[in-house]
Length: 73
Image (cartoon, rainbow, N blue to C red; front, side, top):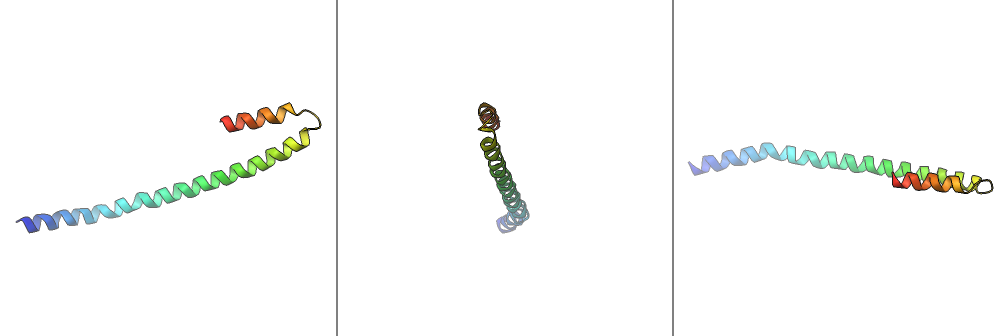
């Protein structure tokens, strides 16, 4: 009686283990998405640095407020 019950539990856990393995895949997917977002922010900061450099001769205040508002958001 106990043996059949324990084997039944192990069978249920065997069915559950694929679903436990599944969140790992989705977490890996999320980290890759965050990596892409981080890469995009890196590109944006380069672009803003470039704009900053161009606008320094004219009005240095505008790019600073732009960059700070972006980092706050």
